Image 1: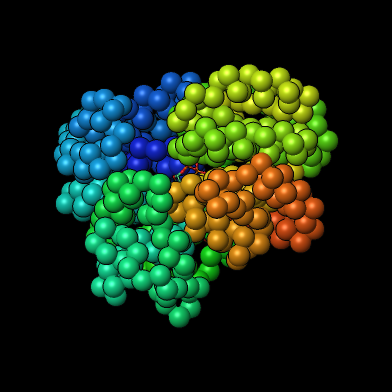
Image 2: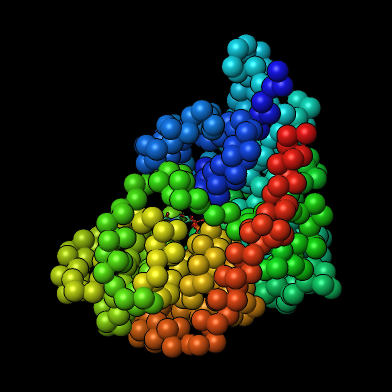
Length: 458
Ligand code: UDX
């Protein structure tokens, strides 16, 4: 009897990476291919705790954890320490895991024939090559962002950035004649508020450029029609997005926090296109002052809003303020700690999405035709904002004042501007239609995904 094919998928330990890789894993498993999903131990524990439904998947997808060499939350808060430890400790554990599968008998004897590694854990590709396993890279960010990461050596050589990714020349950056120039603020390792994190992310992305030689296939969660020229700048890039959570996956798509579904009933009680959805992803942090301004802006806009306030969204104590705020907005505001975001964005009552422009959030907004209000926080989010506002014209930036703060006035103004723009809404519907077509029968991304799965099964 022919053995099942077996793919190993290894994620970078962060929310915006686990969710899209898990969606891809589901697509692969749907075609009768066995999937082992590998995560660092600490994040594996969070995924399993927040998604009890994943137990039912164990016959299709096996979830496995390997150590990252760190023991405490405090250690992992230091990005340099964390990325360093991961790349030193995890390759050995990954190799052991693959060898264990090879040696074991019975149901486990389907050897791993293919490995898909997140672009941020490129060292896994080297392990796979050494062990004679076929491999592909998976990119969680936009293709336009990946182009920049893969061109880091050239940017250093050309004197555009230094060896730590800091800008030396503030000119527009031209990668190729077919590609729109990048602004220096678009560099996908930018962390304006935190140079240490910037250095760590830059180092990790530089190693992505190094490890790219171990895989000639790059799977991208985007679609060709959205980023055609960026796709042409990466040899081997395959558009397979937008990866969408199927209804069955909605319940267990890999959130690291428990989703609060009460907001869906709350949305049901609102008219079509009336609610502002506000969510800044998994890592954005605001100082209390910025947090208050956003809160006052939403309060004064007097439009119904659903706001995701993670317990760690501010670096100050805001609970007293929050009590008063919630009391004042009780007739039109709803706050949750974590939402089932894709279901929220697909809800007819949602009129716009105030976002940090993480790539997953961006794609989820685009796929649902929702206009975006952009307040990027770090890394690729600045580039995503440029694409949203300047290229696809599906949203507006929410700008900081001279003190670096987004004022309540700005929030109010931009909410009303985005809701009032027929042009933005028309562009959103056009992009939504393109996204839908690309993953429908005969669409570009679906065809690519199907041919990739055929390759895996061959
Ligand atoms: C980060 C980067 O910003 C992103 O661009 C990169 O590609 C991956 O890492 P993050 O800050 O987590 O990601 O944002 P984003 O990419 O938008 O991913 C967040 C995910 O969490 C989305 O899939 C979103 O649906 C989900 N989410 C967010 C929820 O399910 N509920 C919430 O309440 C908020």
